[in-house]
Length: 121
Ligand SMILES: [Zn+2]
Image 1 (tube, rainbow, N blue to C red):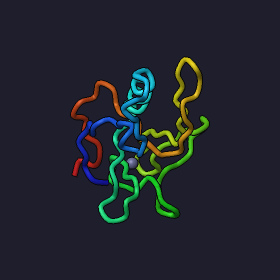
Image 2 (image 1 turned 180 degrees about the horizontal axis):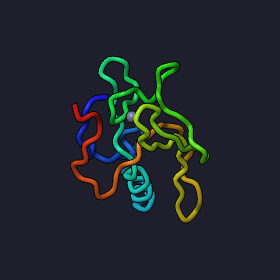
Image 3 (image 1 turned 90 degrees about the horizontal axis):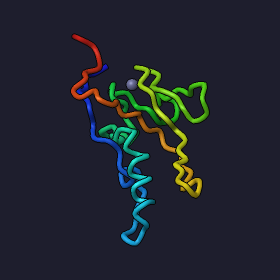
Image 4 (image 1 turned 90 degrees about the vertical axis):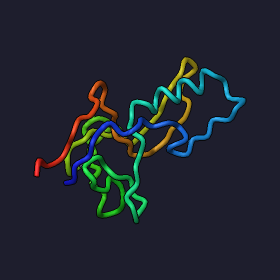
């Protein structure tokens, strides 16, 4: 495992391919921005384009991805370091579900600036 210093920036809708057009209602923009800000912006492995965990291991990818499902629907973690993640996303507003999306995203730590994870070597 490699050292990584947190926090990464939080995720924005555009980081996972969700384009919010200029004419979208402000409430929709705010709801999606707030929802995805609870996750870290996904970073990709240098040559494979797979989503990378904070520990440096690939989270996604057939046979090599470390993502491990948890007990709650859509929730899981990195199988290498245990960092919590969510794979199923269904943000809602006052009118109900806005979208349904599958993407493994790591939870962002709250109030943990500069936390280091990894080996002490
Ligand atoms: Zn990990």
